[in-house]
Image 1 (cartoon, rainbow, N blue to C red):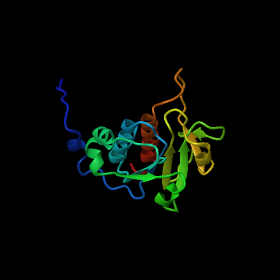
Image 2 (cartoon, one colour):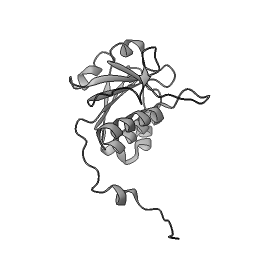
Image 3 (cartoon, rainbow, N blue to C red):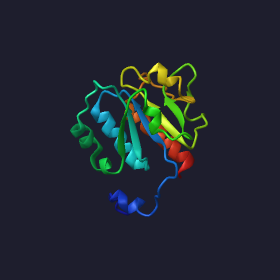
Image 4 (cartoon, one colour):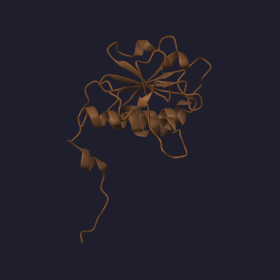
Length: 172
């Protein structure tokens, strides 16, 4: 039997990945935890996403050092843009569709939904989710079906599931 060893992931993926044309954009709506923002940046770099837009108010003070610590080397590859509820749309290209990752009365399973190739994925606050005024601006609402007793996920974990479903459809 051949001995199994671990190898550096770069050895597997080097030369097999490329720049994704029209990568998704992550829109983080009023996240409270800098570690979650750092995780979103790291996920973005895993996929080839170029920017994360954080919608926040003036009184939200995120410690950049905590964001950077969680993002690790991804910090150098993904642009973090700060927006307000009034100007966030300026950071999204006009041909991109806002897609809310939220359980709502009109959300559909991400595994059955038709996702747009040019997608700005909107994820919400760790406690309250996506604000209602932003949900109403989204062209589509998607959810991740869960069959276990826990019916919610950490925002970065849910974002990861949604974005890798997008990658499966459009980038592989």
